Amino acid sequence: MRIVGGKHRGRNLKPPQGKNVRPTSDRTRESVFNILAHGFEGVELAGASVVDVFCGTGALGLEALSRGAEHVTFIDNDRGSLALAKENAATIGEWRNVTLLKFDAARLAPPPLAAKAPCQIAFLDAPYDRGMSKPALLGLLNKGWLAPGALVVVEVAANEELEPPRMLERVDERSYGAARVVFLQNRA
Image (tube, rainbow, N blue to C red; front, top):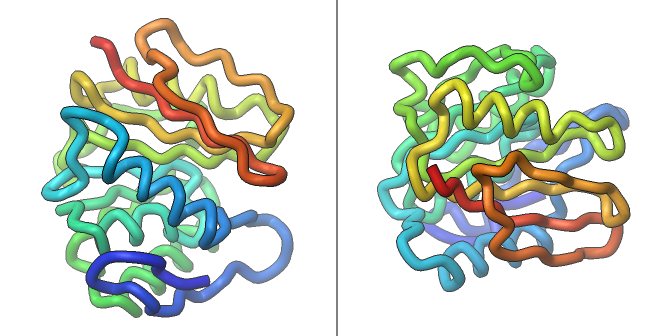
């Protein structure tokens, strides 16, 4: 695993141990960030506040920092994943620009001040086929995590159904092997 673009391009990230965490592939991450850079009017990664839900290794949020985001809040309910995201952030010298929160993404609390919310971009990469994406999306919307016009990038299994809350409009969708990435925009 490595950072694929921006100021930390080529820097290695520590991969997860075991099979509990399924990181987004480098190729998929590169495609997602190319789409973010060129695909959505009014969505700027530069200077953005980002939330990475079900953060795992932290690769999506760290890629955002490498490409100009100002701050990333990592959310996971697993201490091991948060420790790995913290270690990876320190490895690339971005520790001061992250906040780590041990939250159940299906029951999100309102963001603390350290999260620098509402966020302009959110990444959500829940375990596949467990129905965890929609409750997390509702929490992001209802608890004040998302700015008006915010973009939410959701990774699900290729054949997994995703019915987003009505305030989130599906603006793009791409398939990458076993994964499907859905781009949603907050119409609040």
